Image (cartoon, rainbow, N blue to C red; front, top):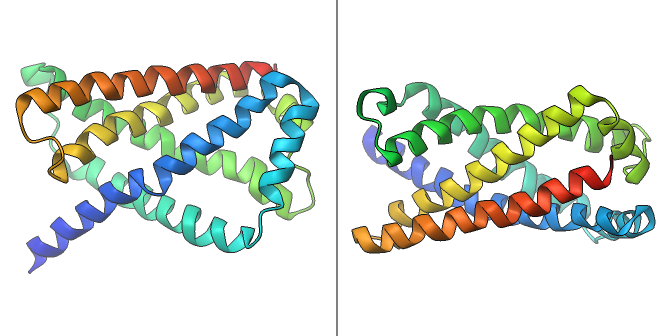
Length: 202
């Protein structure tokens, strides 16, 4: 019985990492990329997102609850799984280890980012171009954001590969190899979008 519960939790953890959390990550990066068009372009995109109907319901039940279930259960997995990358050194073993490391980094980064933006907004701050410009003016915060965004994107892209395996989408070695190249492509593409967005504020 406990084994079935663990299996179901892991399946739910995997699913939520893609839907809705992965989709929200992609959408969030695209909205932030409007910063490359200048201050007005980003502020309009941010204002549009803030003016969505049922925004608080969507944030709580579609973003924050799935995100923190995935994150907290992921931390549990990270600290209870056996990593064997140093023993075997195979590519997938290293990806397994990096998935756990980037998961912890992502958890810390996303929590801090929410505190700096959404929580600050609840206390009256305006989430706009100037807010992000002020945050990223600090070289330490800029470094933290670069590391955090890259870790988050890697965690999503590599997790997408694991999702396809655990849900029976990629069963054969060939399909898993193709999925590896696809997810590497997703990592590169989203990293390009994310880095352009960050440095548009600098």
